[in-house]
Amino acid sequence: MADEDNKLLVDLEVRIKQVLYLCDSLKEENVRLKTELQSKQKRLDHAEKTLEDIKTKYDNLKVARTITAATVDVDLAKDKLSKLVREVDRCISLLK
Image 1 (cartoon, rainbow, N blue to C red):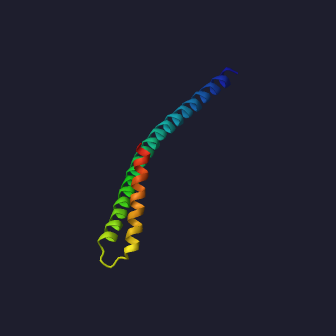
Image 2 (image 1 turned 120 degrees about the horizontal axis):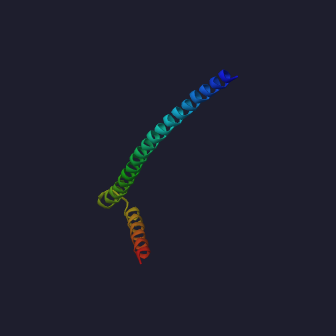
Image 3 (image 1 turned 90 degrees about the horizontal axis):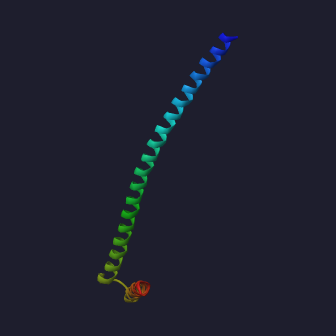
């Protein structure tokens, strides 16, 4: 009976060590994945900021081309300028 109890205790110890090792492995993987997630989030934030900057530059370029193009319809240019003025007015009112 004592031999059987010792065998069970040894088996239990081995399994506990395996579980602890697995737990440690999972903790390390969790830390690695969190670090990777933070890195990718930073890259995503940077890409979104870059995209927003490019969109702004593109819109500015469209407005500039509308204003400077010799073949552009005058009414179209007036509409775009009016829209731009309204947007500036809205921004100013939000700042107040």
